[in-house]
Image (cartoon, rainbow, N blue to C red; front, side):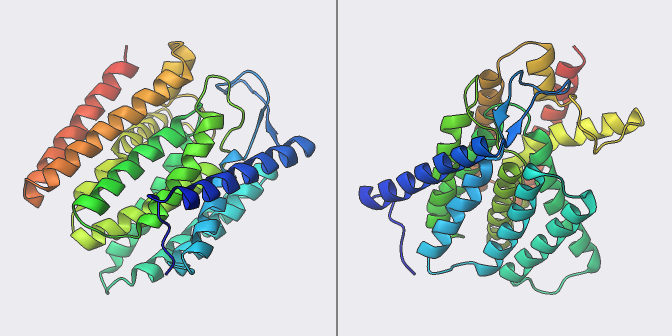
Length: 322
């Protein structure tokens, strides 16, 4: 396998400038064909912005896949499947049933990459439910500038630390490729007046990548505590869904009831500040989990994880209630 060497400046610069050229080429295409996100009453922006800029994430993985001599082919196939369908959603409209079946098929491709041993049927149901839940949670949470890129980078940083200092579980090249694509997207999106939005393809692609990485890590270590790398999104999404169900609302219809939306739309806090807060808070939790993984037993880590989750739930309820 060819090695993507981040310590060598030439490969990194070549990869970065190739991505830079691709995203700017997409901007030209999106402008030409009017692929824009126009504001509506539930939007957190007030002017048209180019949509689908998150396509740079799967494109970055395409470059990595070629560079790596086609490593993790089933993962790559699943990523391309969900990315293509999500990008079609950005261009027009894809029925929810088709999107769900596509996500299900892509997760099943991941299981082929994992080469899972036999386990009970309820284990398959739990795994599929969790994976599809993560993908849709990222889509729900992608509503303000910078939040998808920043939050995803916090997860990748945690995964990189684990991979290099605790439990090697994946090729570093994949982490660097996803990180560089996210960093480039951040340049155009992590600002008060974004040049582009991620669209559906951005959050779906990066969440699928994170599902793969976390799955490999958990299978390697047997430690479920690493799911805490996505806990802030998990709490915000879960509690918002529960609240909407209690109000007898359609939980799959667009809304502005997530905590980050209330902070920006109701409290008037800037997108950059809210996205930064989500990113840094999740990064702090990730670092705590990493430290605990080296010091505590699995049972103790589970108890601490439950405590952190409970604290986040209480904070979420308090902030929303005030």
